[in-house]
Length: 249
Image (cartoon, rainbow, N blue to C red; front, side, top):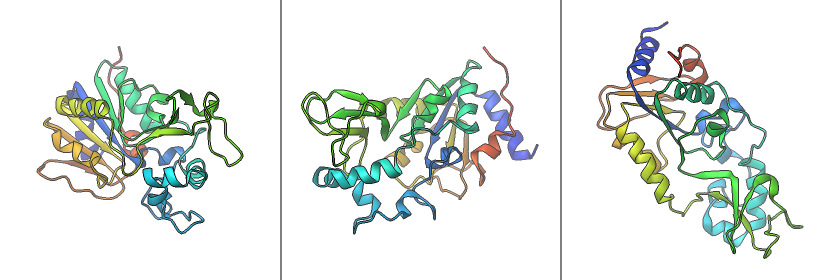
C-alpha cells in the first residue's frame, strides 16, 4: 500500500461525516461516457449544425423538441448501466455507521442503485420525467412517445421532459441547500471524477471547512484556498480497490 493510499485510508477511518462530490468520471467505468474527454458526449456529432451544449439547453428544447429527444435518448440515457466499484464502495461505507452524503453532477441514479441513501442530484435525473402541462411524473419505463419520438402525457398530450437541469436553467434550491449543508458539516470531502469547471456546482467545494480533502481524477484540478490536498491522478476504481472498509453496523 502506497503512502498516499495509506493516508486516504486513515482519513476515511478517522472521519465520521464524509461527503463525496462526484462528476462524470464517476460513471465511466459503468459504460457511461463523460462530457469533455476525446470520446465524451460533447465531442459527438449531433447530425445538425448545433453543438451538444446547444442541444441540451432550455431554449433548444422548447424550439426543437424532436431534435432534442433524438440526442437525449442516444447520449444521455443509459438505463441498463450498473453501479461500478466506486459507487458500491461509497454505499458500503455508509453501512459502517458513518454519515455519508453524496453530491453528484450525474443524472444516471447509479449512486442510489448502489444503495446510497443521502444523494443530492445537482443536475437532476433522466430516470424521472414530468409533463410540462400537468406536471404528472413518469418513470423512464412509462414514457409514451409520439410519431416524432417525443414523450407525451396520456392525460393532456403535453410534452414530458426529463427532470434534469438543462443549460440556461437554475439548480433546484432545496437540493443546493442540502448539498451545501452536507459539505459544510463534513469532516472529509472526496472529489471524484470531475474537472470542477461547471458552475455553479464547481463552486460548492469552497464551502468545505473540514480536515481532510481528497481528489481522485484522471487529470489534475485546482482548488483555490486549499493547501493540503490528497490528490490521485487515477481511476476511481483503481484507488478504491486498494482501500478497506472498517467495521459494519
